[in-house]
Image 1 (cartoon, helix red, strand yellow):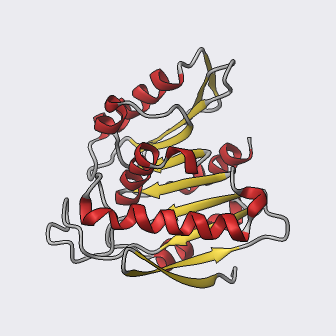
Image 2 (cartoon, one colour):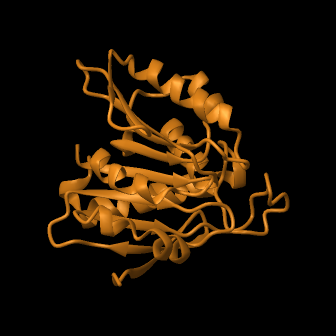
Length: 235
């Protein structure tokens, strides 16, 4: 089993922690955000992202309680802000601090930072795209939607969207609509079916692309998608 280092810092007056994997010769950085009620350790043990992204610095960020919504209306579980202003932007400020730390620790990778989120963490990833686009090279979102943010206008970036046909937690239609809006955002002009689940929509001029993985399952992260996450960040 991979050994992960535990790190701590303070942002906006709140103590924050993350687990970190560092390979011998890292090529990029991935910040990973678990779902509502999850933990960094639980997500790391279940998905072992560094197994697939073995050339990446993998950061499993730990959410904290305090922001209500969805299935956690009182905000009693670990989670992330869903929109600007939630929790006085505690999570956005935490990422500002963390990205600063990572740029000092890995200066050669400062322009190769990705954000990956599942469920509530996926919604937060959309929010990072909206509020902190210059900090990230690309985004990976599983099982959430960003229709309102995309319709308001986002900076064109490459993204990978993972959508389960049987998702009963986050509206499947809005997840598909988010993908359509991203295709419009990057002004794709080329379509490449990879297999029955993955299609890549790209702009051959800008090299921006949307990798859309649609699987038959539900709200969970499908493990067959993880090798394609690696392909996305190393492409």
